[in-house]
Amino acid sequence: MRREIFNLKFSGIINHAFLIAVSDILYSSLSPLLGPKKFKSVFFITNEMVQNIYFYSGCERKDEEGKESASGTLSIRKREDTIEIITTNCVNKVNSEIISRKLDHYNSLTEEELKALKKQILKGEADEGSKGGGIGLIEVIRKAQNPMQYHFESKNDSDLILNLKISINTGENNG
Image: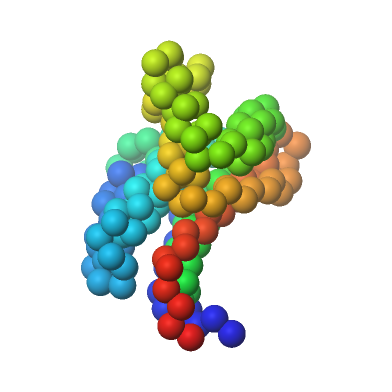
């Protein structure tokens, strides 16, 4: 049985203050357990996945200060040889089809093909509706060196819950 070394779970409002708090927790809790290069990858991947909730959640609302925020969940679990980062958030059915197409495509590509696609996107314009450079999920898959697992659950007639999971091998096996 694989021993769990670190476990963080959050469900609620995702905003800039949350991202800062998670960054502090990761730095103080995971940085000592990982080498600098692996920690940098985990930090980047977590940041990208939380930003995806913040930017693309279909259930956006204002926080207590009236600032833009979103609702979702974040779970980070470190076991002996892997770190799993899992996020969930609401998306509409149209966006779910776009996400499925993109992730299926990205997951089918090799490291070199992902790198070439990233360069191609950076030379062109970001996808319509993208609030960033359009390369976040590509970079998550590249840095994790694993495919992005995903599935949708029905929420209501027009919305779905998107579940994303990425695993990062830490190269450790202390068990």
